[in-house]
Length: 424
Image (cartoon, rainbow, N blue to C red):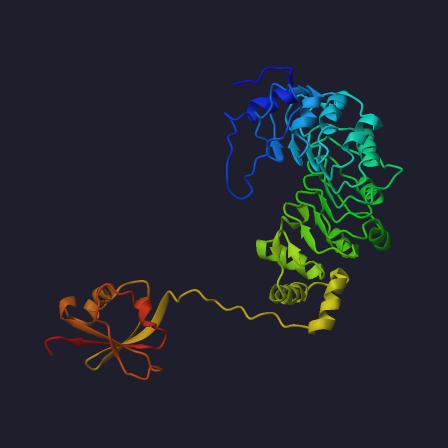
């Protein structure tokens, strides 16, 4: 059922967390806070509020009574207001300023681009450590205002905001550790580098689905731009050159990389993609979410050497020479066909006759008897067959069971099949 328009935060709070809809529950982590309310409050002792409030998709447009918010939300630490109809930062400020313990705030999919965030309003967010503004179409001016007023902000989510450029702030945010800025349209590295300037302490950068076409930066400059970057996601970017992958080695603390769905890797097999990337990134310990073990790294580096062993010297990557120094020049692996043999040339012995013939190994003993019927002039019901492997220590093996497949006897070229008559 569609929610009515023009609903306040307090109205929705009262409805969702009333005793009828959100009864008291016992157990670990299930404690419910029932705060003292101002004398005469119509909601006194009525609301059961957890410290994490989820009020998404409720049609909220405004704050409501601030005194009531202050009375009931003094203990709240996380607040999800995503997918509502909040378009005025002043209303958001009225809510947040009365939630003094708030550390996590989700404002995704609210039309907040329709108003300007003033610094006085942004000041009410000062205690927030994790802020989600996905699909809010928040301008960079709004983001800069937030950054100035949130000294302890650690995680920022700016996905789906249609950014084609990054506007660099004059003030660095040293507290930010994680930035999700996926599903925008940041194709040029000159825009991405601005993020390093603004967020010098960044630990994790998630750039998936941005169609970034290249990493165009000198190696020493990359190290200065992202000195603390530990993890980067470039899923579904537009990278098309191995030189771009090699550039990742310039981040001095990089340990984790995500690189699925990039044009560069499309022509390669799944095995080639993983091994060639691992071999090029010696410091990365996790690729596409999977840990790179010491054994996998050695296998990948040896695979890399063999992969490029016959490539012209002018096309061999520099990493090849580094690995040759480590392992020496490796010979190509012998190609071993592990498929089961499909046929064998055997000697068929019957009485004093010896006949060489090819037999299919996917057939059964009964089918072989039919094949031999003309040669030995015996009905299949009167045949006894024995397989003799010249390397076996126990002599001929009777081929008793009519439904048994010939390949299960381990028959090979040069083996012998003895045929005897049951009535002999």
